[in-house]
Each structure stands twice: as structure tokens, then as C-alpha cells.
Image (cartoon, rainbow, N blue to C red):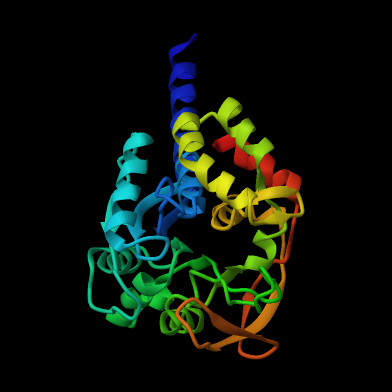
Length: 308
């Protein structure tokens, strides 16, 4: 090959790599992983694994929050997952209870990151919103510097075990004040509601597929999810059979492949509900957000098993 052609090929490769890097979505994942702890949901752990094995995402950091377990436990679990994935993504510990707006390593990380790159960073919020609210409260420039927030939480219509909408929500309802602050402060907000999460189920057959075919951390994930699957098969029966709802994984997939989800612009407002795990969502008034209620379920699971 002539020297000029070699140089041209090298330049083309460099430009392609630069273009790919620029196209990656910069994200911070705010989460409360408890996968593997007895009687604790596994969705945050699956969501992290999904994100870590997705080249479309540039994960700037993982911030942890109380919720599925204590802050100590969720922080330890996030570190464990990073170690299993051999990932160098930094993990920062955040609030240990609702309404804690004093600075934590997590809130500082969120604040400093978005202020350093205004309009570039998406927050994938899949736990209570206390860390994000604390970052917003710490500096008036934070809210407008966030590119968008994609948050799993709340319910528009969904009912679980006969309870009213929102009565089982562990993310938004765990810190009602923070939920309201974040929704009202961030200009681009997507709600991944319980409604859409409950339209598909992680069944025993899907667990078998995970155990036998998953390309990423399959043994670790299979061992960490089997007890939660057995527990939920005694309780919940969804559209695909008995198992558990994939909850937070939908928020990650929305960022990866928004075309899977049908847009649903809706106006909502929030108000407190008695109790620590619920919040009222009033539809038809308030600020406009995107709250998809339909998705291509087959494409959702295809992407899920391509990555984990």
C-alpha cells in the first residue's frame, strides 16, 4: 500500500473513533442497588449491568442512595458490581435518608459534573431523588445545566395488589419533597412509570436465558437474581407469567433506545401522600413531561439479552 493511502486510512480510523466518542451519551446513574441481599429487589443491579455493557453510554459515575437498602449496603453493592464488571467507573456515596440536603460525595459529584459540562449530561435516576435534589439545592445553576433526567418512579394508573396508584412506589414516594423539586426544576424530564414497567415480567424462562446465554456477568447475575425470582413467583403474576417486574432497567433502555418507547407528553403535578413510600401524581395539570405508557416489548427483551 502506498504511504499516502496508509496515512489516509489512519486518519479515517482516528476520525471514526472520535466520532464514536462524541456520539456516546454522557450519563450519571443515581441508584440504590441491593441485588443479592435477602428479599431485596434486583432491578438496579440489572440496570447497572445493562449500562456497563453498552458502548453507547459514557458513564461518568455512579452515585448511590438509600432505598432498596441502607446507604451503607447500596454503596457496598455498587462497588461489588463495579468489581465484578472490572469497571473503573467511580462510585460516590450519597444521602442516607429522605430530606438530607447537606452535601455528600454523591451530590457534589453530580453538581460539579453538570456545571463543568452544561447541557451534556443525562441523569438516570433509578432510586429516591434525594441526591439530585441536594445537588440542585446546592447551586442554582445545576438544574439548567442538566441535559435531561430519566427517572423511574411514580404511577399514573397502575395498581399493584389492589393498592391505589403510587402506593407501592419506592423511588418517588420515599422522598416526596425531593421528587417535587426535581420534577419542577429540570426542563427535560422523562418519567418511566410503574405503568409501563408492569407491562412485562422477568420470568423463569428469562432467568434460564440469562443463565445460559447472557454475554456479560451471567453467572454473577443469575446467582444474584434467582432468590428474588423465586420469591416473586409466589406473589406476582404479570402479562408474561409469574416473576418480577424489570422496573429500573427500562430507564436505562430508554436512554439507549428511545425508539422502543412511544412518546407520551403529559402534564403532571405531585402532592404528598400519607406514608413514606407513596406520592400522589395528578394528571392533566402542572408541568409537561414525557411519560411513555407503551413500548415494543420484544425489542426491549432483545436488547436486554444482547447486553446482559
